[in-house]
Every structure is written in structure tokens, then in C-alpha cells.
Image (cartoon, rainbow over all chains, first blue to last red; front, side, top):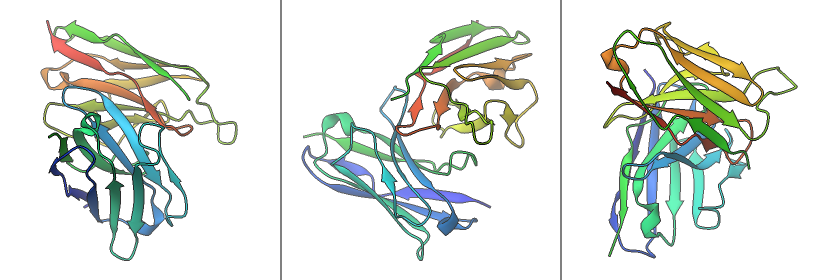
Length: 115
Length: 113
């Protein structure tokens, strides 16, 4: 059974860093893209990062470029989202998802940025 | 950047009715290489993560009831739900994954009349 489990969310102050993890199982992690998507409370879905299977290429929207860094450790079957200089508008549920065509998403981890 | 314009914002329906949700992209999502449209539809119920319904614009994900039908090509896409059931009440989103930055539609809330 395919599973993606996010962790690392919590309450942080503006300007702080936070690192999210996405533990994968049930599929060949090293052969799959990994995506991160967020959803602010009561709002729609927003893509925030993608990384290719071997980790050599990463992609971000302008809203997080330069602040967020996506990575994956294929030996540990785990993906990461390092978030720096967090802002109140980064408050959201963060989901990791396997390549778009599979429909495998985690249950999400909540990040709250507030003083 | 590709802009996804999804409509309507909300829809009130009765069980058994048919509904259509539309998504229009600002650029074509059709790949000349494989003739596939890089457009997906998701369903999200409260407190749950999104569930993939349709990919490549018209291919139903395994286990999705056949009352969910995706259609369209290029820049205009439709999700049709025939014979709406109470369990279909949810938010629906389209996603273009043709090119980065990947973009979602704003969502459609399906409610009970």
C-alpha cells in the first residue's frame, strides 16, 4: 500500500525556519517526482515545490522561490521541504504528493506562522 | 504562467441531478509529443486531502465511479457529474501540470440544494 506521511509542522514565529518531512512507502521512491502543495485555512490549493526523481532538478512558484528548498533522500525514502524566513501568509496545511498522475497524497501537516 | 479559470465558484444541486464544472486554461495543455492534455481533476471533502478523480483530462482514476466524466482538450475542460449523490458534496479543483509553475483552479464548492 502506498503511503505518504508528512511531519514537522507546528507554530513558528515570522522570520523563523521550519523543515517538513515526507516519509514514503509502498512504491519506488527513487523513480518518482515529489510535489509539495499547501492550502491556507478556508482557501484553495497552491503548488509550492517539485523535485525530479534523482533530486537534480527543483521547481518553485515565485511566491516561495528563494525561501523554500525541496530535497529528497532516496536512500531514506523521505522528502523534505526546508522553509526559511516564514511569513504569516505561509500559514497552511502542507501536503506532499507523489507524481501528479498517481493521486497519492499524504494527510498533511499544519504550519502556523504567528507571533 | 498558465492561469486556470474555474467556474462556477459554487453550485447547489439536488441528488440525482447532473452538474458541470468548467476549467479554462490561458494556454493549451495539449502535449504535441503524446497528444495528452496535462489536466487533472480533484475532489476534496472537509478535513481530507484531495482525491484524484481524472487525469489526462478524461482518464478516470481507478475506483472512481463512472458518473464522473472528464472532457475537453487544449484550453477548455469540463468535469461532469451525472446522477449526483450526497457523497459527492465536496470541493472540486482542476490542476494543470503541463508546465511549471503548476496551477490549480480556484475551486468549485458543490452543495446540497
